[in-house]
Length: 248
Image 1: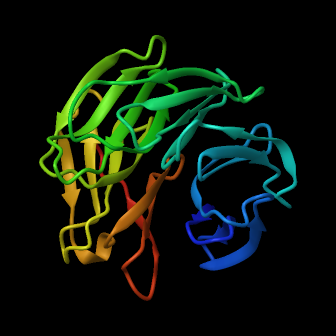
Image 2: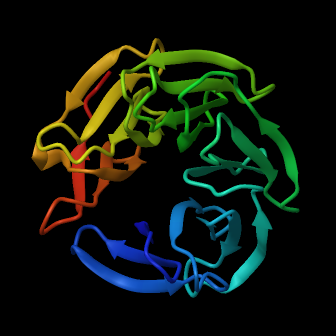
């Protein structure tokens, strides 16, 4: 498992979740003054995408030597995901939409902007099976927490209402048809994750107890095994939690 370290310098911790041990730490070349915001792994090509500051770079997941990049997102990024088949990199740049970049050349293909107040894009997830893009909101004044876009023309398809959303990260389980959202609030027993159906965005479950994470900054789905890994900043002594994903 690859875990981005938000503190400087930019590093990625490679963790063996079974052994609960760090296997190695990858230092991102050129990231001395920045922390890692998100990572995405292309297992087929043995490439690790790393987002930091307003950039992204592709490195070897074994020793972190640079394969491509770094490339510019055009603004500071938070969440990132990759369409490995279509060759696209999606970056949530704390604005009202997201940036689509070419995975090979790094060129920005399109900047998607959606009108609407009190929205700050944070989480980013791509559902390859349905060609859908999920972007989550963390904004105390917000009334919408999640937007779903078409992967073909980037049109806005759906919105999920949420008062004062703290959904800092998002991931999709294509196998079971659920989307998992991470709550970044530090309120005791009111953080953790929310699980929605991808079909109609209805609630599957809300796991808010402290045992499911407090001030959750990251979430990653292991669809093959049916688990979600939650990265919690304020849950001592363990910052990484494995949760069985509820069925839709």
